[in-house]
Image (cartoon, rainbow, N blue to C red; front, side):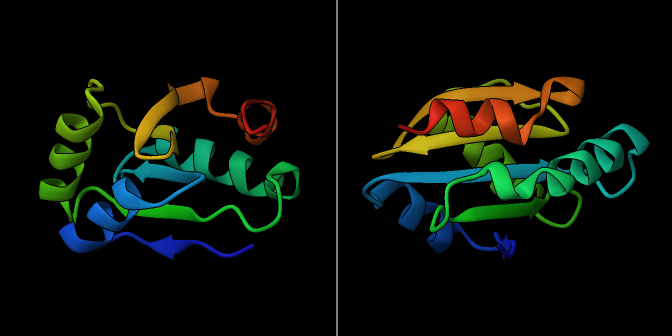
Length: 109
């Protein structure tokens, strides 16, 4: 699997309009906790079902998109943060040390 850089409002709208599952990983490049969560998530990447789009948001560079995510999906801003979107709605959200590819995969049916 590969990260898909989330760097435009248009991409976010495409996620909202998509059928099925999409994942958004919000990452702060200035935070050691975020770096550890990202590394652990990548280590267990194989747990995520093949074909699931996984978006990476550098929220330092794209704070406007991070704010739009919070507003669009009615979630409190966290960093790092992992969201599972299904048919345009956030069905699972977690942050910090609770981020787990295994736990995420269990949510995808």
